[in-house]
Image (tube, rainbow, N blue to C red; front, side, top):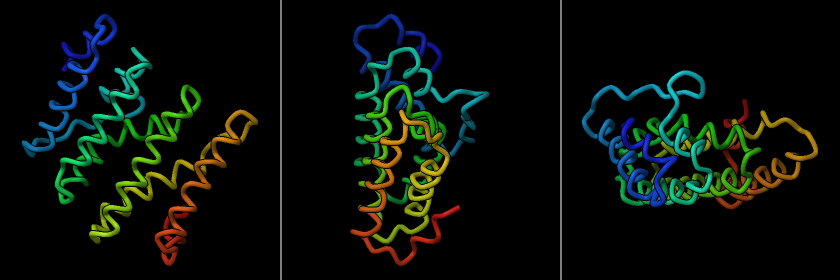
Length: 173
């Protein structure tokens, strides 16, 4: 893993190392080994390291996550969310560097939630919706991030209204 991460700052073609890191992360999950507990402070998630070393890698990281969501069986999505949870928190809770990254990840998670809603994968659906809604309440409300926060809240509320809001109260903290 470290060898791939060391290539990021110097390589022109990021897709190879990113794909390799993704495969190694997924290998943890499929081998039923203990998943490394990545966090925002101690052991940084490899995707956070990639993003910190090259912000231009964001579209490739999002593409990898989207591809994983599309090719992973819905019964394994919970494990996938666990593997990438620290990275999702990093992007959703720290939107200042790139609001569009936060918004595009937010949209991707809502899209996956819609698919899971149709297939009644409620446990995983709850995990995704909590991830999405919990970050909305902790934004610092300065003038710079206010518009971004309102936009994400609007997008989330539209999703709840479109998909029925009978259980809306359960996602408030």
